[in-house]
Image (cartoon, rainbow, N blue to C red; front, top):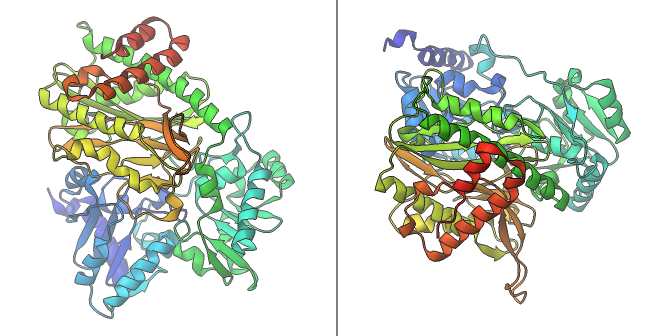
Length: 605
């Protein structure tokens, strides 16, 4: 490659010019925005712009003579390919929460030098760790520099999509009721005010939705909840007159998005402000003179526990989603088998056709994330995304992984299934079966209410560990209610647990163990589950127990399995699941989709 015209090399040099002018030795660039969102508006995709790496999570560090991208195992194959020729080295880290970038900085930056970071996009908790660790190395942290303000000449503007209300029967609780609940939690914490910057919390709390962030129906805003009135800081052009009046009637005032910092600075000194250090930035904290009380956002805990009404709407959304997938897969299998077909089926075709099938369903709003349709070796990249420039044609023999989801007015879906193309090998069937055993094991688990969610992670890994196998990502993430497909506080993963991660009734979580063989194939089998009180046969002597209700409705293709590796109880679980899928989806299907459903839900036993 001619490195003189490599976009990443040129952009890194622009960043270095800014560092020299500002007398900084390095800059740390997280994958983040002022709301600490997972999916970022283009305006804050500086890490991607500078490095060329398109994965959703990584940290870029640039010094005056070196650059490194820190990424976990989900992205290693992708990062190697996308960083080629950029001059940026890939540093492999074991988990997304790894702090290897700090150790690297301490080795590369001299004592007394300054490391820059934009404090407006750095979480408060992460900033404290960074400042403490760099301080031990004699390095100063400078948090007032946004290198992209100078280096990124054609930086996109912030989005301008309108905000709308989440109305109808799917909006199960009023805005006033939710604000009342948050104020009660504020009083319990001894706070007079509460600051909220996470956009899904704001959307949930105010029963509002938007389209500022890809796949998540949220909008850019900050919120300040006071003892009587609440102020929503949002681009005023997003709020029409009718919505402004409705908000005002519930005690919510509108102020410009750009006056957020000034409003915090103007809070009286005797204000006691409730702040969640995991969900506000360093810049937000430094803007206010108020006394701070730290604790998790009350809305984060509340929205993670779906009400009975919300759970009912989610079940209906799952029926719509399952029917759409039956329609798609019936078409897909017929198209693959059609000898007269002249147009090739590619990974991009799958994405497009799945979206068309879902768009016909009642309550559909849009995809909940970018579809991962990954054939053979592409499946070994957990966050692979096909593009026009790089994608596979579905032909020959192999394993096809399809991870997709949708937003409905009554719920958010996320599902991964494996499909055989041509003839599968014994090794491929073995891998799919072992992963499915992990999905079944966790789906059947019973555990005491309040169990910290990371404690459940090993349950899904045991069937793989028995064979010396493992996977690098977490086993399960929380899922929103017509909100973010990834939400907390629960996380079934190998993270350090804290009390907010306790499993409670009403939490919707994914179950998605996997197995990835670079250059060959990848496997993941994913359902969404709802935490519910355990049924009959569980003693109350030891407290309340929970179990999982599987929400996702779509067959698990038995052609990908080696039945001899399944125990009788595991086969019984699979057959019972398929009976449920068939019973719930049959009434809404006809023709080829119905025939396909019945074929793919036939008993294994």
